[in-house]
Image (cartoon, rainbow, N blue to C red; front, top):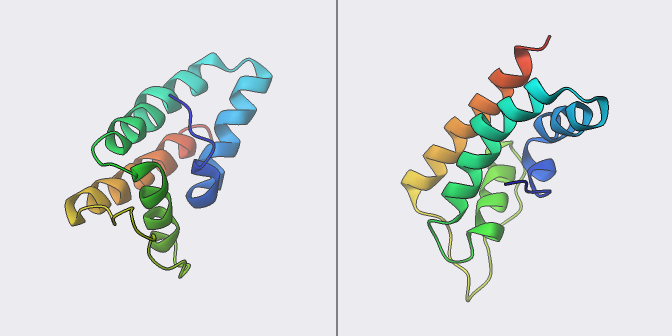
Length: 99
């Protein structure tokens, strides 16, 4: 369920998950697994090459121009990018609960 690539586009979520694991905060770790990582992995499974193209899309959503993926990979569908944007927002909302 974990994806280290999350650090590229949602580093605060990745760091919160890492901290929760290292401090034994199972409640936060499970909340992030269920509310962010599991849905991200499910979304990643919807397209061939999404392990790369969704990460690049996530980085672009954060405002960095990283270009498109190279063939044979394809850019994610527009709806999947929207779902990714909502998922990123949810991830940040989940870590705000701890503050």
